[in-house]
Amino acid sequence: NAGVTQTPKFRVLKTGQSMTLLCAQDMNHEYMYWYRQDPGMGLRLIHYSVGEGTTAKGEVPDGYNVSRLKKQNFLLGLESAAPSQTSVYFCATLNPAGTNQPQHFGDGTRLSIL
Amino acid sequence: AQSVTQLGSHVSVSEGALVLLRCNYSSSVPPYLFWYVQYPNQGLQLLLKYTTGATLVKGINGFEAEFKKSETSFHLTKPSAHMSDAAEYFCAVSPSGGSYIPTFGRGTSLIVHP
View 1: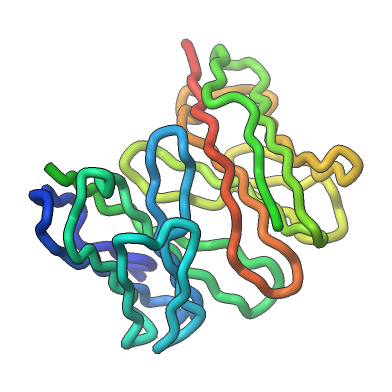
View 2: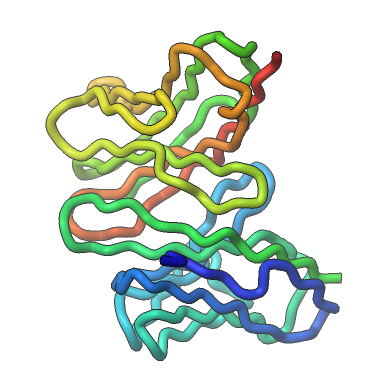
């Protein structure tokens, strides 16, 4: 049982390049989230999805796009990478059934934009 | 609207000493409260959560937290620190009623000295 798997784990990009981060889950959770973590800033929500085919903006959505074509996958895209997007990106899932379920997190993708 | 304040970006204790990590929240509805721990190069893992009922919540690794509604606090404690407790700790609040969009504090780095 892998839980939440993020691909790749590390990546270095040049300014202006594009890339897609993949989050895959095997827990059949409805909700999926993308966060970025920067020193002293905690976790900030980029985009989230409440189910297959749905997406919504979070706190810091600019410069990112997402897609949830399949329930188990949530993709985060950077169309034209900027140095300000250097960060550690975390994917999380949640099963809304039952009361106050916690989120389950992947191990992160460390992205550097030069 | 909801927010989380973690007092102290760094807390330093000696091995065997009491650990106290502070979390205050604001929420317009009764909150669900969580503490997560993040070890280096890993994602966040649930330590404990407050649902309803008992205000003193016990979690993994000997940690516990007490929900104090009058003080809007959910401080995390452990009677005796261990070297392995050194990590980043995040408090999160999620509104009851089905939003499932948690808000995270900025995190507190726990440093344990031998």
